[in-house]
Length: 255
Image (cartoon, rainbow, N blue to C red; front, side, top):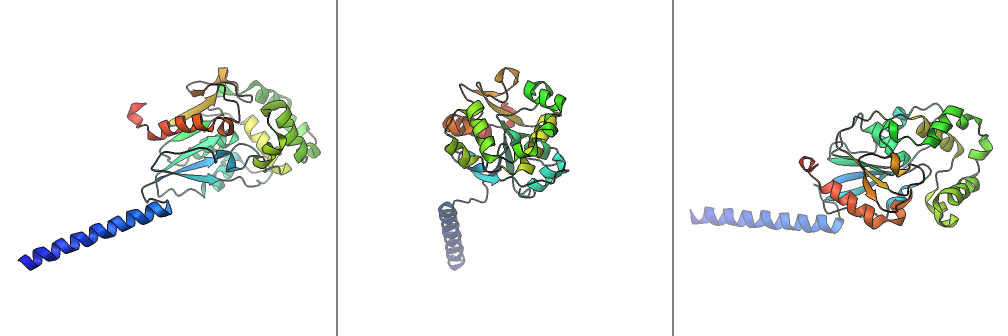
């Protein structure tokens, strides 16, 4: 009987030792099995390095989904489904969309089941659509603009820099790398013609009070970032990270 008990105790010690080694190894590798994946989708023309300064709380792992060049006739739903192939749906996950990325994210939310969906610097209701978008759609400006304009990388970065972001063009060029003319024309058409359906569960919104693209006064039910402009993911990463962490850690019954 003593031998059996000693054997059980030895087995338990071995199991605990293996579990401890497993935890240490997972910690070293930085990938815990129970981490929640947080998938980020960037704004139009931007690569996901715009999110590099954002910090997530313990238990959440940052994942990036980059843009690809669409077909000229590709629907928003088709595009969202292609991007969604990069999501491990067998594991709990959260979606975060920034600017145009939030439009793609809300399309994904129609056929996926994320724990939460988080909008940064974008819109989620029809009454939040900027007047600029309405004017572009009304005048069919996307089709009237010559293709050579969409083809000019320098024009795109300089125009955004001069009229919108007020930051060094060289710095903007590092994150604004998706400048293929077919992509830009398609993306501008999609975002200016998209009408939100506004019926998403567990949807959260973070928005800057000085956003140049989506004026804050039109935005409803959002966590405000004081003096945050449309590039606050870069310029006010600490504040955005703090709000993002609070949302990720929030239980749905706390809403």
